[in-house]
Length: 329
Ligand code: GDP
Image 1 (cartoon, rainbow, N blue to C red):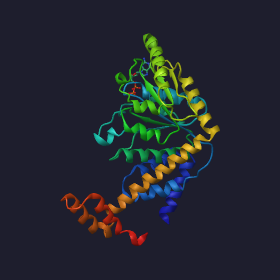
Image 2: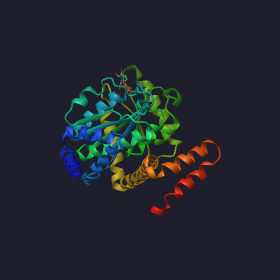
Image 3: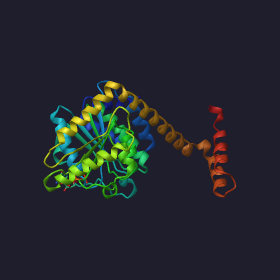
């Protein structure tokens, strides 16, 4: 009971917008220890729900495109429009290599010091799925703490984009003024996720190239099926350095949000995301339980050994292991 009280208090402090409580709560949800996972689930269950939906945006792009510069400019602009901004990131490289693509360099200097902004780097974790689910939980905590613009930043090189798209409403892809997908290291799959494409660094002598790139991507995107029948992807240019086009980018994001709210698409998208999330959680938790349950250990070890020796086919082994569960069904 003391434990639950303790978490109830943490939930209240998070909801009151206490920054330190939020940081502490995120540390808890990021922990992979079994006991902390249970506590994190209790904490998330104690958060109030309701209120106007936040704006959830994924921002992706190849290294060097200007993600952190753009997010800082965009975030400060949104703060100027009475928003409170949380920036979370999904960077699976930190789990794989111990290093990270998004880097530990000082990023978003002014934004990170702003009282209406909260920036949290990618959690470390063993799998992309694990990292993504922790980011999703952190997002709920940030929303409970009153942040109403959530930016999920990813590195633009692969599966982390799918994960980011699975927890946000709008997907923004940043590109360089060059032209040609391959040159930019952007995969077709990522362009298929794009709701808003921004050609950054449209300043100085890069302006003409930026205009060409915008035109190229406008025609390229016409050939792709849009993610949602309710939204035709927008392609525009901006400069995170001169700030030109940054307020337009915010207008595009708000337009997308408006359409999604008015048509009910936001609710539908989020319900579907929640359903998928539930099944991912169940899969994870059942697997974790199978691996650690003492009563199952013997059957598991025997079946696994038989599979490894080639004596038993994996599906037969799985069926045999699961048959041990039938009494509780
Ligand atoms: P990230 O790796 O995608 O996060 O990129 P950064 O935000 O760290 O930016 C990479 C480099 O591009 C830095 O030297 C920035 O100053 C520069 N940069 C970012 N945005 C712009 C822009 O709009 N115009 C120009 N000219 N340079 C920019």
